[in-house]
Length: 342
Image (cartoon, rainbow, N blue to C red; front, side, top):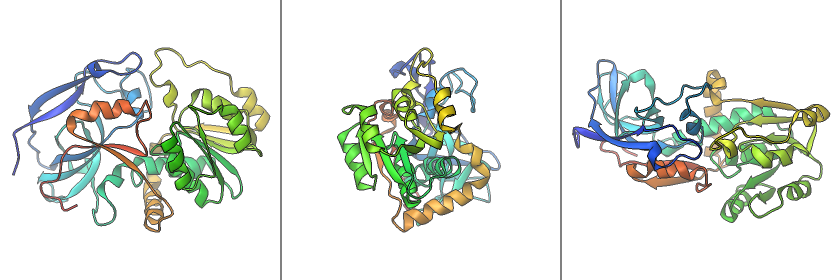
């Protein structure tokens, strides 16, 4: 039974110049949509907020279309089917998909994927078994290719991707150095097996890196860019590999992000630097998901989630990504299920 015929949603009200503010977002009320033939009506249970969404708030060419102004913002959602006009789903099924920041979404059945609550907590479909996990898996193993005994450095190491990168590198026998910004995060990195940790807010990053990496850096998994990455590049070993996953340090800069040039460092080290997005590996997602699930099941891959409750707190949860308030995957719990057994 539907709780209401109206719902809340969040639209992009204006394109931010620098850090987004409350004025960037607009809360509106709208009708709960009716699913057409071949569509399903999804009730949002959990919603993901991710740093890449900041780029989509700009009207610039990128690997994904920008969010339109005055329309609902979209991201990863775990929800339950409350009405189905498709033979592929029934009421009560738990699904994951790229849906709107709203309480209900009517979408084609092919736009969502069924998940099994008995395999793992449903939130993992937005984290360790979802986009962040696959990003860590393919970015590290396909581009970074860590070998046993090599040194792997991870920036943003306590985030949804970085924390998994470090653990996968350990599984492959590498020595792992993690960079994070609070003592709680540093302690967490130690608990999940990082060999060395650096607090970029309290340590001299260059000196700390030189001490933590006496034999140089073979793989640098870059989530942040900026001055932290500048410090790592000076320690790259011959034939080092640098997967570029993100540059969160510059996402809210109003102008160009200027810094030291990397070309000579790459030439001297014969290093490979390669940017990527997880969609580059879409044809291999099944492989990645299977391996990630096996590692979670056998306990060799641990994960953390920071869950904020309440639809009204979605913008604050998103903005918290840029101050480092989250440990592991940042999620928003919108509501409890009506039908799904989780």
